[in-house]
Length: 472
Ligand SMILES: [Zn+2]
Image 1 (tube, protein in one colour):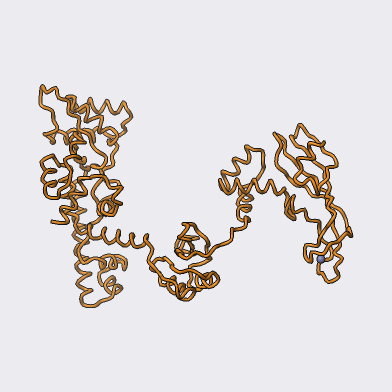
Image 2 (tube, rainbow, N blue to C red):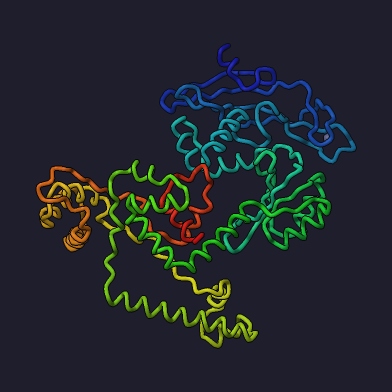
């Protein structure tokens, strides 16, 4: 009994009367009474001793071993004796045990809040079940939402950006303390007035980093007119990325040429580039003595090629018409109506006066054969040129593609004479398809290569060839 008394959530204000143990149900019920001597009215804080009535509350507490614990708590109602107070009768508060009207003890609520904070709703429920705590996902989330926020210290450097509650429907504003890299407030909308109000209520911001939105510009001007407004790094880089992508898009032929050169690069070509640009590419070539097989071309039918060429010619024609109509001063809407195309198409074409080639498909170069190409190459270099046999071998390993694809691949290997071992040669050459050689050189990939941080950029022949073409 004494041990149970020490396990109560508050040993000063609670008195253990008796307890019930139900082994079958796995429950322990503790019957306790509140024995506070000083009771204050929650409205006027006036002390009182006049008891109105008594009633019982049931509170779930932390489990003990495999037993769930319920506190059957006997508490009182009091009269407020302050005649000026608007509250006549109030219930006894036990601030160290539980919140008013709560069905669980504070310590259990704190435990659940910690679970909810770490794991969220669904995962939190799964862990709680393992610990013998019955709780719903919404309860966990409500507990997390009810945790009071820490006080905000207004930063000198503030980041402002929008975020969506519902994409394309409702937006809010996120405010970030850029000195400590942490969010400090979420505003209910992305309006200038709301931001201005927040800035007025939190004076002291000296620099505000934002996107190029006119709304935020106006909000900052109203709320913190003395703060310096700067463009944030993300949007500057994003703009640079989009511009570079557009520029590289107009040099699609040059990129294809680069891709071809890189995949056919031999030591001689590397030497030439190295001499021209004083770069140590030979080291790269020597570090990778296996010759690289160019990207396995896609199976594009003649009909599809013709269709693709026709579509490209049509796009090019529209691009020229858009620019000629623009040169006589027509608006985007009028151009779109006269050419019978969407306004977005006209706007896209007007972004760049040079015709931009379409991007390659993102799945270009992906084939069911890809995982087996290294194996096929090693078998090929060991002198196994029988397509049917190779097909059966990889099918036994799990290949689910067709014989025609394997046949196309082996025909392709035959065209690469320099990789075919001489008859009777004992030298085992094992060319490998490097993963990078399989990725098409799209404008976005070239842009990423150019913008990548220098410390993350490995010596890459593709990159140096791009530079050489751009500079020449
Ligand atoms: Zn009162």
